[in-house]
Image (cartoon, rainbow, N blue to C red; front, side, top):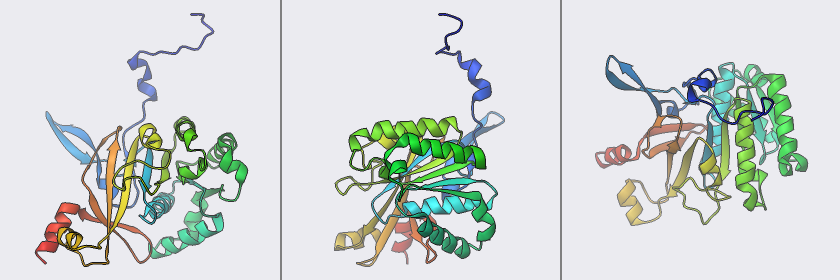
Length: 288
């Protein structure tokens, strides 16, 4: 191979200095305790909470409509901004002025100084810009400029599904482009994915099939179940007509994680409050 050609292989040891450190990027929710790493105390391996999403990971956040995906993405954004880290929020569904109102209300509910932290949130509005929505290269060029100029640490795309509406055959290609782009720019990221009505609520599948879940570093599945039968009442110990909301880490190739299904609630302020594993929730209901 000519010396001028780019080398396409490496010995593993040569990559050591480029390998990212493993630590958590906090979400401000109990998810921060649900990812872990193994450390050794003497010869004994000990599991310790990572403290958030794995640094530089790209996580797929999927679920049926009104399952809390955007709420969690916004809560992550506010928490990171309140800690002094900059977040690039690419809004594909809701116009930026409505995103402002939503983030401001949540910040006030959480007791955060919105005027201060809003300077750490950079917004690209693709919802009303067809070029950004339909042309991945145009959007990535805009994102690259914002990441470079504002020195962002995190990216949220809500939703990645909106970037391949009416062309789901291209979902894998489009998701891969954004995955590689964000890896290059070293951004911890959330991709919000919408489900189609025929897709199982409990799986990581979303519009475009499993393209997102296969490419990203991990998936978080959010779900809601309407209690509408005696079987539901008996199983979940909840009154008919109520809603049970659940969240589960479907997989993560970067670090260990809790695989159980957890129950969560949406507060009156629109924030996510993870309560307990589903089996513990049911047992507690049984003794009440």
